[in-house]
Length: 144
Image (cartoon, rainbow, N blue to C red; front, side, top):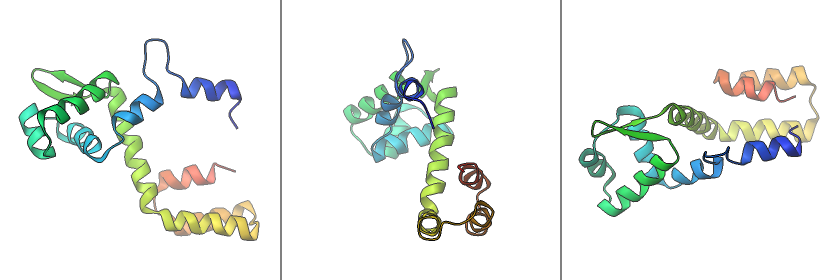
């Protein structure tokens, strides 16, 4: 369990940096997320990205401004590319997507925990049976 001080450190932005809320806000709508993912996967220039996204110039530049300000992407030689921070956020977003894809299995695990007060070893067996992603298994097993 995080102490109150640790929670404040996680939520607040470092001096001169961006906060978690800023990062999430930059990718909070579908088109911004598609734009961010497209840059993360293949990069691209303005015209290609605008065409793929199907937005006006103003909408495009508004989204790009948020991604640039938060340091998720950068512009280099007329091309947009993902930054180191952007790569970490991209990978975390992929993990969240995998968790969402196992939503009903996770609900079943929660239900079993709530209703049956399972011993840790039995709970872990159920997790290993239901979940096929090693990263998600590690998170769930280490939670106890």
